[in-house]
Amino acid sequence: MRAVISFFILSLMLSSCGNSGEQEIIVVPKNFKGYIIIIFNQKSGMSIKYEGKKRVYEIPPNGILKTQFAGNYGWREFAEYYYEKIIPENKLSSYAEIKKVPTDTIVGFMGATGTVKKSTESEERLEFIEFYIGTKSDIEQAQKQAAKLDIVKITE
Image 1 (cartoon, one colour):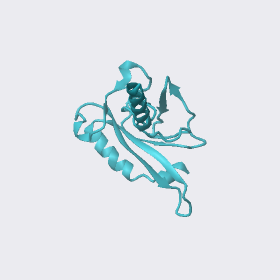
Image 2: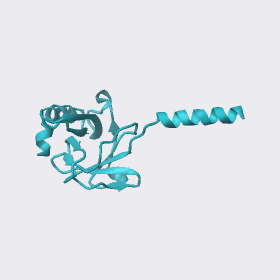
Image 3: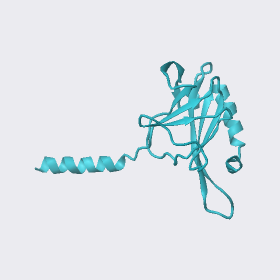
């Protein structure tokens, strides 16, 4: 009986600790390189789409996607990146540390999540996430470009 109670308590503790987000698939146009900015909670944004239980973000050529999805918080694996279609031969490798990104191979790279205030008069915030596609030098250049973007202006 004691073992059953201990198991129940341990199971309860582990399940409450594991706040997990949804897995993500990012589909970019053929030969795309650069930054990807996904802005959440946009009423007129891309409709919610899933492949199985994974969110699908279909990125336009400019790299900026406004989506109706809410922000995606919690623990999850690296996003999956594909050129044009979700098929094995179009899949790119995923990285989260810039020092590990190859210099001569195009990959998907996890950037950062963030929020910005819509205006100084409001407490309303815009939620977004950044990803990158390219070689190491492409990604480093795209990070500099993305840092100059005004997320609020993008949504207007």
